[in-house]
Image (cartoon, rainbow, N blue to C red; front, side):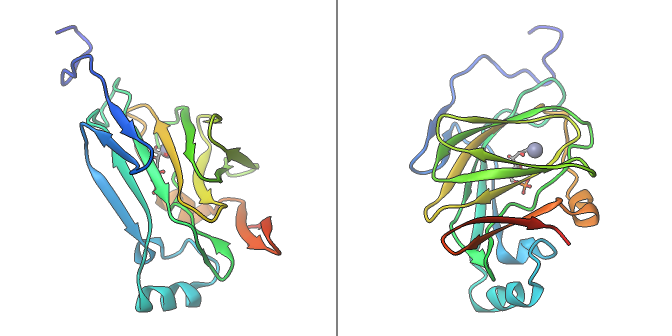
Length: 190
Ligand code: S6P
Ligand code: ZN
């Protein structure tokens, strides 16, 4: 054991399967349904209706065994289902890292992207297979499925970064992503 390992994670190989969006060995899996995204979509009435009718899964996050602790480098695969609420595309809740550090997203399948917002400026970065989106320290991020199939990406982030979801509820994301007339339309948050 060396001085930095708290707790020790042995050098290891982690497999990921794009088809199932899974990792092996597997860590925690999180499923977020429509009811977990209250406050995220503009049309709150349409979201409430969706929750009452089906409350479908909007996305899932499968983590590897690397824990979210200082000096470790956890990874996870997010799978966002295709769909929209009154035209506003299915998205993740979005968060800010309280300990501001960079993060990378590798596109694995489908079509999507990430809205980043630093409280002043907002950016849209597409995430296709074979591309990496770089999220700099201090930029809140929310992922969007812009296609008609599952959108999947692999995230790699510092274990001590933490996740602040309230920041996005309080500040918004600068932009909203809609599917309109067959294409992506980004609008001011409002
Ligand atoms: C973690 C990284 C992703 C997200 C995941 C779900 O820092 O950004 O693994 O956690 O895409 O998004 P959210 O906003 O629900 O955590
Ligand atoms: Zn993050």
